[in-house]
Length: 296
Ligand code: TA6
Image 1 (cartoon, rainbow, N blue to C red):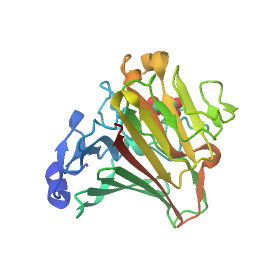
Image 2 (image 1 turned 180 degrees about the horizontal axis):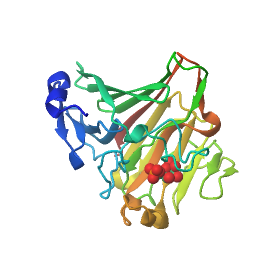
Image 3 (image 1 turned 45 degrees about the horizontal axis):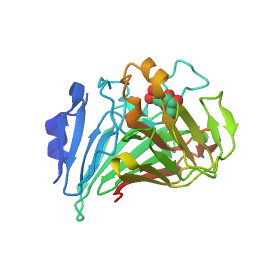
Image 4 (image 1 turned 45 degrees about the vertical axis):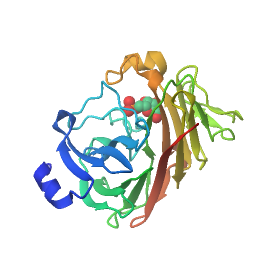
């Protein structure tokens, strides 16, 4: 039984953080501080809003997203774990694993002296104890901690992604810098492995690329919004770039047919050959820090 808003509030509400019934009645934390505002749904520990003071919203949400128990929310920062994409060994398994559709538990909340708000959540997924630390400041920081329980009988391998959807003025006008020197798996072209392009990523059609063996910070240049968004990461060796464009958007019920120009995903991940193996009792932390900057 999920905790009530009253129970959550009495135990975890702090200055700048309260709890409400969100869309579909799903429990959410609402953050309002002088530095930024944000929202996080307890289902999936899913950040659905982050807007630094004086900036436009940074994260994109589909108008068509469903908000139902056990169903993925479209937009924000879904957590993909313990696998990414379809599960090769079980076609019936939910895409991107089930961390994003599980009800996470709150561990702690803090109103910090610099005006930011920190939230810690956890979930048990198979033999893993998974924790997410989120700090809403002028920037947004997420750290995904994955620990294989000591009771596990052998090492385990997992994939993970913070599948971040960014709001953009027009995906046809943006450029993503940081991946110029990295080859990629092109999921729009039969998963062919393609060499580094030496250029920023530009968009003139559906894009679904898995860049492997890269720890680079990505910079989203958005002239239409006169801003850059920096996506810096720790302990992540994969970056996924996605825009569904026209045809794929029309095939997704929870994605408006005319929404594709306004978003792009820059995903902080460890997938494929960058999957992580941990032994019983061992843990791994992957972090992303997202910051928006005006461009005069
Ligand atoms: O990260 C890109 C991707 O793997 C795409 O292939 C597309 O499937 C996207 O994730 C969204 O997946 P979802 O299961 O949320 O519809």
